[in-house]
Amino acid sequence: MELNMPLQLVPYKTDYKQDFIDLNIDWLEEFFVVEPYDKKVLEDCENQIIAKGGFIFFALLKTEVVGTFAFMKVENQTYELSKMAVKKSFRGKGIGNQMMAFSVRFAEQHNWRRCILYSSTKLENSLYLYRKYGYSEIPLEPNCPYDRGDIKMELMLD
Image (cartoon, rainbow, N blue to C red; front, side, top):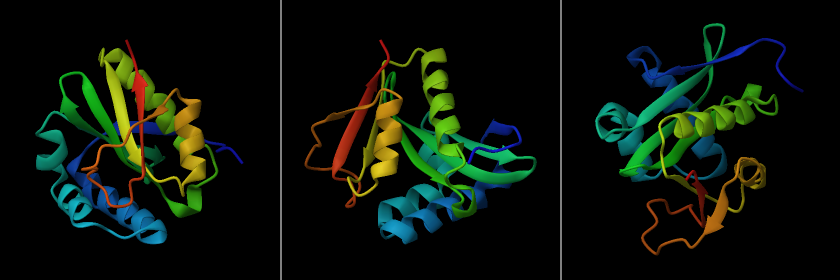
């Protein structure tokens, strides 16, 4: 069931930091565990993501934060799509779809060469969404930053 009101996608504001943390921890605890690396990035997102050249976005319905995602800079013109979460009561309403469409447009507008992401093969709906937006599986390096990560995908933008 799609939303019957417009979704707004807005950049990071300190006011939304707790939403970024809460949405991601809720999602992680539902499907996996919160790893030390997650804790570090979530609790210090300004330094771990934004100060390093990354971006955090929020999906708002009126004034309620219902979703979030981040781009973490990997190297020049390569970013990791990360920390994507939708509030449980709003899942299945097209919010993830809208965030993915926005993320691809944002990457194209900034002339990035590629986006990567790490995921888990347990998350079939997420993998379907990533593939729908052009991501394809690539080899997973042995030092994957996430214990839960058993698949790596990339989107080439050239």
